[in-house]
Figure 1 (cartoon, helix red, strand yellow):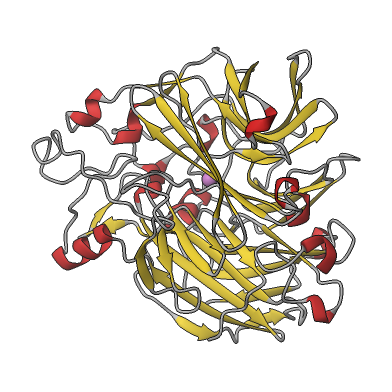
Figure 2 (tube, rainbow, N blue to C red):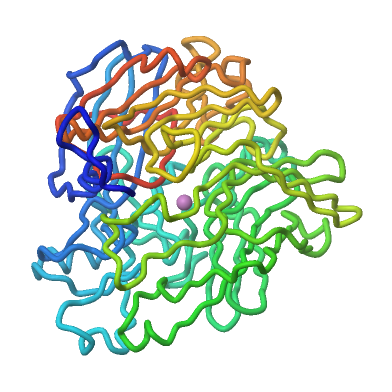
Length: 511
Ligand code: CO
């Protein structure tokens, strides 16, 4: 990012963005009274979000925000009011470091123990920092981190209950990814919703575990597959019959990590120019063996959605030219955005009969964190919503919420620039009638039957960091018309550091 000073005042975009990564050590719980606009009375349920809350240990900053301790935010809506709570996940590592008042662990993304090389050498202890996403399913609330098992939280108080091995399904330390997807009507399961998630165990080779659960969190299916070599897989896409991964061309050098020189993830390298591989796993063994397809080079963190069109698979994702890590010599808060490749929405079509794969970019704007209507997961869909740059070209921090109409290419944008920074948008369908208000999400209802028929008839919820006040706001947008601007801004009176992922459940937690 450039450090040019904006003309109106003595702030910089880079400085504003970096300040959004200040730690928030204080845990709050209050009714939100500072509301500009009106909270829709039919908006009923809880927005849960996760992200790094503490970006230091014992006063020493983390090297990468992905190494910050997980802090969950809950905003419960009912009867036109909202109750806010934020609480740290009491992971074993967080508790031990708080007690010790100093860092005790290296971070996966490069945070090192102080004291030079010696305390880091062959020190492969990592803390499960539970900071990536949150899942409400089958009366459990789980804080997720892709390299370990989930932490279970109380959905009302956010108190940490402990590690959750899912009734013995997971081994100690086994990975349960942060990017689950919910099939709203699984045809393998009588049309009931199914939670689909995966876990990746890496070593010389890679094992992918694929899990599916019913609405009570009972295991429906569990398959495990081996891949040759190293694979870095953050997200997947699902359709009624398939689970799809994009395996980007990467190599992994573990030696500097073992020697104490780098963080574990700093050994990740893109292999420019080499093809990606699309891995297509059947959700049910009766569909045969997994298949793979050669795809263009690049890097994908997140998929917007996928669907089946006859014998063709369509997969929409945010693509980068290559993976970007933060090397040992770089301070993340001074990253030059302009020097890095932007994420751009692209559509792949894969002909399962001929094996032919094509990729085309949908729009040029820099974007991340795609979202959609929960009833459209895995199905043909029309709208996706993303965090996006304020400017139409180039790489920049996410300051806008962007709506893409995939049928007409029409676009809408609401921007919080110059001093606001958005997070992942989450779409909440408007209930069909007031009586349906508590059942528009697949964990608690049928979003097709219970929500208004229009695919964009609902709200987008996003946390916005307002650097002018060093304060975060919950912003509610009308998904049909982003240009209207916020229906409501709920001012929190404190800031929440830039976060990662979350979800909305129709269950409204009591205060
Ligand atoms: Co992610």
